[in-house]
Each structure stands twice: as C-alpha cells, then as structure tokens.
Length: 81
Image (cartoon, rainbow, N blue to C red; front, side, top):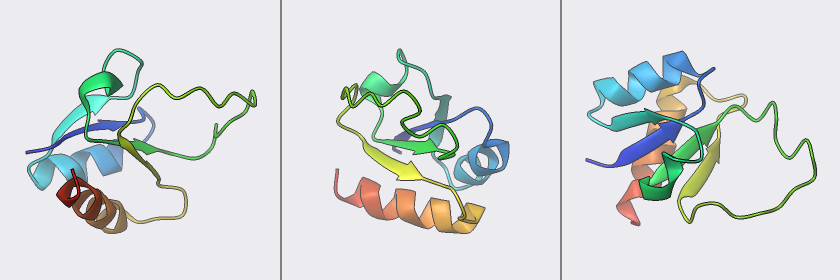
C-alpha cells in the first residue's frame, strides 16, 4: 500500500488513512522523500514565501475537508503513481 506523509496536527486524518490500509508517517523532510502523497493542514502554507520543491509526491491540502474526503483524495492520487 502507498506511503503517506501527514502533518502531525492531523491525527484524525492519520487514523482514517491507517484504517484504510495506508502506511502513514510523520511529515518531515526525511520521511517525504519516499512517500507517494503528502497531506498538509494548510495553516502554515507558504508562510515564508519559499517555493523550493522537496518531493515529487502529490500534496493534498486538507483544510476544510473531512477525513473521508482526504482518504478519497489520497486514493485517487495514489492510483496515478
């Protein structure tokens, strides 16, 4: 199953992804290198104005989404990998 990096503040999303069989890791620079998808909260989105690409994985902004909506997005994006 796909490896998904999730921002630490999104515990409910982590749990939902684990229940759906995904390998969930914490979102940090060392873990995202080998991930298929990253899930962020959107709260700290580009605060410093930096646009450096650290990963080629899909990034999902979970702001305003339910856990099931995030799982659906992850599923759709991981099909493309």
